[in-house]
Length: 212
Figure (cartoon, rainbow, N blue to C red):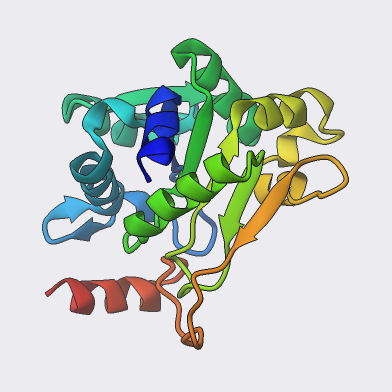
């Protein structure tokens, strides 16, 4: 355990929350309020409490529709990076280079109930097995995470045939012929058939009830 913690301390990890206001099914969902605060801010505050505010970055677009969100988050003391709307790999790469990051934890700006303890476990496994990319898919929807090294991200950004489709970043990284990857198993007996993803109005209604 001490060895893993020592190796982890050598990493420059950035936790990037990506959010935009242009959702088609639930427009503006990142700014919907839960307990009096926007969803995206709730996520950032939870992450900061767990990992430290200095490691958290909001990634959004230069679209004017994202101006209000970006301004609010900056006023709350978080770092904000804005770039091309559809090219997620490019935005993430710019952040990684600017901050000299070695690894990135990707968090979507509507996953309010993300399991942060799982992130720690996945980082440990990534270090132990010297992985490029690790992800999970066995938790409740909206609670899973993914971690990547910056080299794999830069590779995707350089060679993606359709860079404006890299919002689906997992699709590009989940390639065992290119990257050393692993699907993390939490050793659960079952995966509950429910979702904690914020995609539709009914999801928001559920969030409001759960937060009470």
